[in-house]
Amino acid sequence: MIINKLIVASNNQHKIKEIRAMLNKYNIEVFSLKDINLVIDVEETGSTFKENAFIKARAIYDIIKLPVLSDDSGLEVKALNNEPGIYSARYAGAQHNDQDNLDKLLFNLKDVKDTSARYVCAMVLIIDINHYYQVEGYLEGRIVLNPCGQNGFGYDPVFYLDDYKKTVAQISDEEKNKISHRYHALKQIEAIISELGDE
Image 1 (cartoon, rainbow, N blue to C red):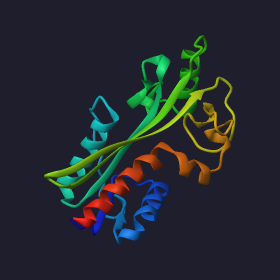
Image 2 (image 1 turned 90 degrees about the vertical axis):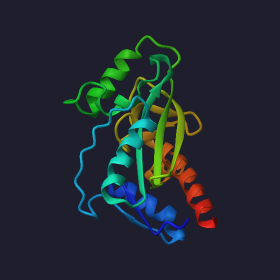
Image 3 (image 1 turned 180 degrees about the horizontal axis):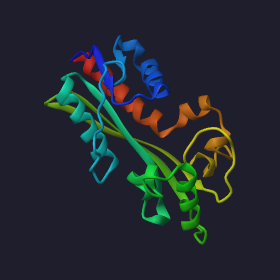
């Protein structure tokens, strides 16, 4: 089963570049939504990252009838029953920003000893109406109460990596791209595409 074109359900050029680089060896043309002039606002009504990624991918596939790759990601903190989870981007409310989300997270963790957490990235690849694949990638760490670092975004300044002895916001983009939850999910998608090419 050969894939010639892949539509990524995003306009994030950093993400598109990363996916293009990983899939380049398979001679797959990778397009963003902007590249195909598709403006769509899909309401993500799922209760998990995988469900939301599938809802988005299926909505786009139904329009374009080409292979679609979609993702949904966020932060899970064990002591908070895996909050903020699918609400990571709007933890403090729809009208609030990254700093508000961060402030709420740190407030909720101020008396918590075990701050172990993980970033989660769910990806869904829809080939056609009968073939789709779901994967998840993770980056394990813990939350520190004192933000450090200028890189990254969102919760990166408080997401501490014990192996690096730094927060994600303190490592370079190059380092982050080699260990991120999205990277681990993408590697699984690459393996699936490689197997499909052998069929």
